[in-house]
Amino acid sequence: MTRILMLLFVIAVVAVVVLGVIMLVRASATRASEARAAVADNPREILKRRYAAGEIDEDEYLRRMSGLSQDW
Image (tube, rainbow, N blue to C red):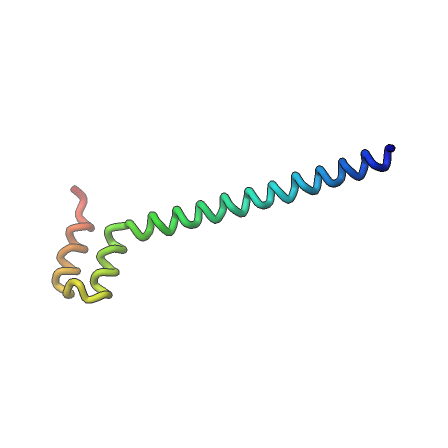
């Protein structure tokens, strides 16, 4: 009887540890994806992508980048 209880206890501890690790990995992945989304929404990053894609020329890029650099 004691061995069965010890075995169940060990299984429960292992299950808790595994679930904890899974939760930490998911939370870390969520934070990483939120950070990537925040960088992607940054106006400077959007401007860089538009310039790289050829949507705007160099003069427009520099003018807009200058406008973003000013403190209002």
